Length: 116
Image (cartoon, rainbow, N blue to C red; front, side, top):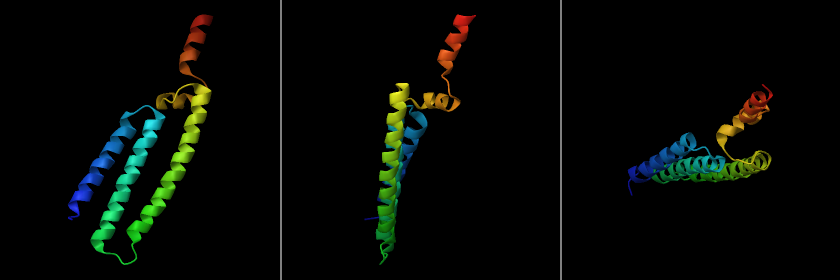
């Protein structure tokens, strides 16, 4: 098999994941898109390992490390998303910026409008 086939597939997977990260507002879909991008990297690592006929199989070893990192990332990421969802009632990424500020602008605007 030619190296171009898995490389093109990995590029398509990576571009799909990148689109998902940039265009989605739901935090769970963003995490799934990051996983898709990591799987594209794994596909490239294995494809180049097979193509180079490496005796140490370094590409496959790096793929195992990437899978372990991806598992830790999804575990921590889902824990954060679930905590935010319990506290805020939404998993919208745009609303997460409000968490860093300590208040929600919608309620602040209605509170000042009601007081005036």
